[in-house]
Image 1 (cartoon, one colour):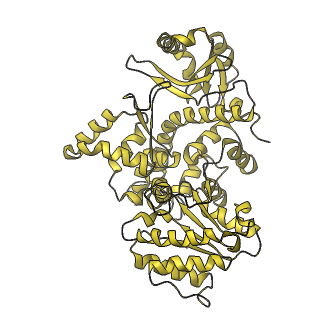
Image 2 (cartoon, one colour):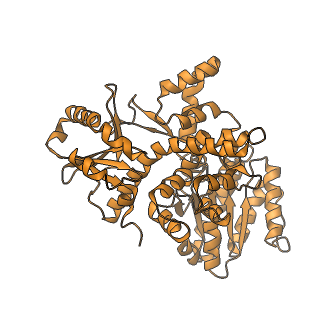
Image 3 (tube, helix red, strand yellow):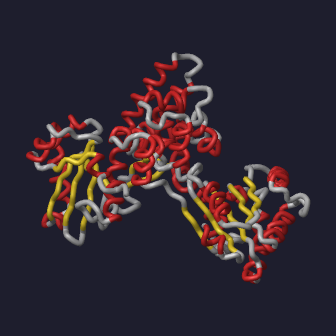
Length: 473
């Protein structure tokens, strides 16, 4: 971002990422580092043109622009304001830009197209630029990349902000708490790699506290900073339209289309026929759901399973939303305990995701003992075969199978059964039978007394401490 700003010539940059990932902070910090660049930042509301223009006028007052520029009274004037400011060296940042895809606001994109084309033709003489930020990925991309859209192919730069990697999370925990496997899984299941949430915990003084103290402070008190986070920043867009589907998937990760339809039919028969459309919107437009298929399966396979993409949203819907809603009617301590127990259940699936991510990060950094050539996936079929993790090193012809248990004591009793799953998988994929077969048993923390028993059973023990070794500087 600093490199873009330092050019001192016209640019049109797009920054995308989930809500609260740090898009606005990125722009603010970058502007601080590059001296002498004036800025106008506007958060676009989801409203009619009058509301958007009012927000622009308020922002101009905050940034002391009204002494030199008239607040726009139309969307056309807003486009011309951006043009004038860019020529004067300003960086204009429009947050939640995707709302311009709404029908009452869409004309602005045509006005902006004319302005952008004119500024691009004079790029060397225009010292300012435009940054658009958005959290509804599909809508923002449609505005800027759809061939029929006025702004198609106009951006000069694109930054996609994703979660912090595990190494960064561990660095935060090392500085402010501890890096035990239990704390890593607990906080990663809640917050994944969203820096703001870890900062909130730090500012509340609980990033190093025990589980229930952290939950109480962050979610269950009147001043809790995350008590309304999901409702205000994730679910408000949906206006209650997809609650049944989202809650079911959050509590049943890995459910099928048929499972979801059957559940909706139990609650509301007339809405069961709409499930397919709801799943498509939640997956493609809002990116709240993801559909996974078994390794080697086609993307269109009917074996697809649905999951909540975002850890925070999944934890909120599966474990926290109901206890928090009952605060006025039940003792706080009981509700915190209930939420904690539900989170422990949710951490079972989170462990699989975290282990896969750690394998990928280690392979990317060239550390560890397995060089991935394909993203880690699971496997399942109608014959009751179920594999948590399948990792491939196609260059060395190695396939590694992993079983994940949140409770390490449950690993050993299940290994013979898991061997059967592996054999059925190999029977179905003959080309892998000549490869070297490796087996690992994964849990958050595996005691030394259990490790020799796992090794004698043919499984290499790996806990989160093993998998995160060497990631931090």
